[in-house]
Length: 144
Image 1 (cartoon, rainbow, N blue to C red):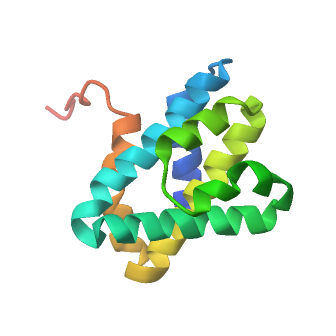
Image 2 (cartoon, one colour; image 1 turned 180 degrees about the vertical axis):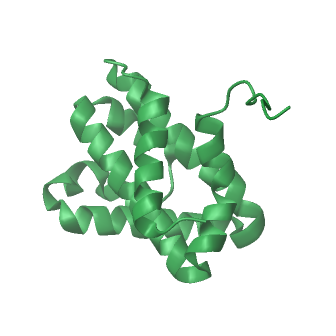
């Protein structure tokens, strides 16, 4: 499907589309959390809830290792996958910080998944998440 750099671009585009220029950090938090929820829905039947949670925890851990000052806020999320707690924490951030968190953790999550099952399969499994962000009326066939 697409390589990791393309996946990163797709995640960024998906997040940007979902945020849609909002200047409300609560809407940015909702966009990020909704992506995690859709990833959980897509992957749970394949890798199970424990696998989804393990990837989430590892992604957070790797984010915190790059941004140790964030550990005070996000450290508790490494213990359990509490999406609502994540949403509340993101809502207290600035928009750029929330977006940085979302982009880095989502990219890390994808990279970890791709390491386990391959980038092509990871991309296919998460296609619904990306497509949901850009869903709209279907394209018209103009070839006739």
